[in-house]
Amino acid sequence: MARTLTSTGQITDPLWHRAVLGTDRAGFIPDTVWVTSRTHPGYFRPVTRDDPDHARWAHEDFALAVQVDDGTPAGGPHGEPGWGRLRTSSISQPSLVVEMLQALDAREGHRVLEIGTGTGYNTALLCHALGEEAVVSVEIDPRLAEIAVKNLAQAGHSPRVVTADAAGRPAAGEGEFDRVLSTVAARGEVPWSWVEQSARHGVIVTPFEVGNTPGVLLKLRVHGDGSATGHFIGDAPFMVLRSQRADMRRARELVDEDDPEATDGLIELNPRVVAYRNSGWQLALGHLVPDLRYAVYEAAEDRPEWAGEATVYVATLDGSWALGEYTPAGSPFEARRGGPRDLWAEIRAAWDAWVKFDSPGRDQLGVTVDERGTHLWVGNPATEVGRDQRSRL
Image (cartoon, rainbow, N blue to C red):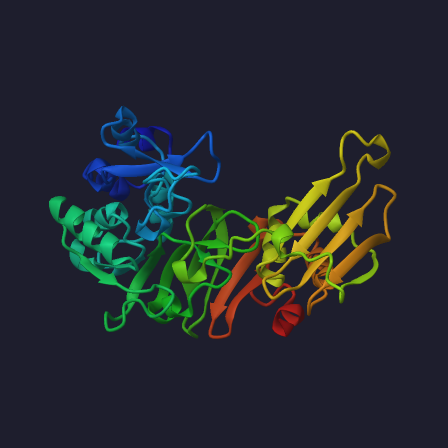
């Protein structure tokens, strides 16, 4: 593993090269892992240690699910025992592990708070590099925490492992930390407690997720006024903090077109913009219209007179929903909406706020975390995106 990651240029810091060399990842992989079923998408089938792939994957650059359905597998599509529906803990892809550790910029003498112990592999790397006395790791699942402690002991480490919800104040009484590293994604809001427990000029590295976007890696620097600011530095698709998990229902499941109180109208905004794949736009949309989900249904291919047309559905969990009928002829577009909020108006306001800043990409966006919450900005913290719209939600 160390050879692979150094030869491909992913490990650039000898500190973490030594840690990877000195830590056997296989010792942190349980007897059963779960992989996506090719025949039944949406299900995860168990692979045990008897399978030769199990041993091979331990030494390759793959993430492996080590728990499904919070430890109680829900079963397969036909009742197969041991199958899962939701990955709830994993041993991360080694190349991404190293990217996050190097972004942390931790050095001898730094104290590190790790969010998400899992089975302990990342914790072991921290202990190897910085010493176990410098590491406090938090795991919400008591069974995983117990497994991690055993795995770490077998690897020669005994850091402090705390069982707690990391969305709260996960390490109360443990003092300040120079570095905070999360191995689970914060969805929508980075917990303020992580900033509170950080020393001045400390660094926080965490996956971050909003809306329909895969996770991105966020690096924050803590300031003397108690706020933290930083930029997105890469991709980081991770599981979400349990207390921040999104409702898994899709847009179409939340739409009631037969609602007698639904209203019809016209909109100028192209409804297809919700699916525009610019990463900067998707971050802005997810931030300004939280928990929005959408679905685009293209016109049937066997109806050439409808070529290019589509119905776009949008919905949020408070019962608000809308649809827009896109046609290549352009605006205005027929629309229908129900629930307490006008989602097309909110999406239009988000689009206008993004365009106002010349449609910035992800590399131009940053985040501030303070007592008021998590804020998205362009260029510098003074230019917050959609401040007025966000404050109304």
